[in-house]
Length: 348
Image (cartoon, rainbow, N blue to C red; front, top):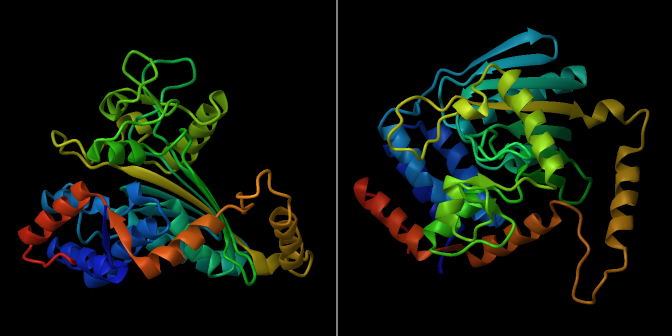
């Protein structure tokens, strides 16, 4: 593993995206989102995604400068046409507009179509928490998950995330795929020539596999079995059906070199302004009491720390900011080649 300074890595991503035709402002949004994923330990959604984003920008399968259309369809509802832009960019501007409406009305909903992979949903939950806004965010994705009892993948891993602002503490962030793990972790294992643990995925014949290549041909295993499948269906209805995006069987995979059509990923966001409820509830006090109950809970082992969701990622982020981001040799070499292509020095 090689260790790179996060600021230098972010600057590198920023330059590459601008060379790919993305505006300076939008390049900063994407590069910050990618590096934040690495800082939190979600490397499968971090800088390793830059090469494929760049490929799709250069071959025009993703628009570098989309004309994002954010339409107000009710006092508290937005419908967004992402115009096939980078998912980070489309979601960022949609979220900012949704937050503004939530502060006016107490709540807002944002339905997004014609978007692309947006990285980690937790990144956008954190942005909302900074504005004292509770966020629920979900997205569909290319097929990777079979319905419970079925053998053919239909649903994406369809992640769902919640963000809750906390006074004087890191926000509570719950971000999870509806499969046992995100598909990106299997892609990362393949790139690193590593096997995957039991219970992550099935091969094309429906058998458990430790081979990431066979897993990518087959199906992800749903989180909590039938319950994970049901949650994937709920996300599909919100992010695919309601928004007017493609449903997962028709969402195009940007890693597939043979495809030329846009991905048409859908996202759904629901926002709640905490301040609107503070006259009727002690949100800050009650949440702090609840978190204290969690933190003071006796651990099952002496070397175990009881944390609330989001706390580990916050600690990991602080540590990696100070000590650097680890890259596999495969990612390092691929990013260096990307830099050479655009005549940009990769940070050593």
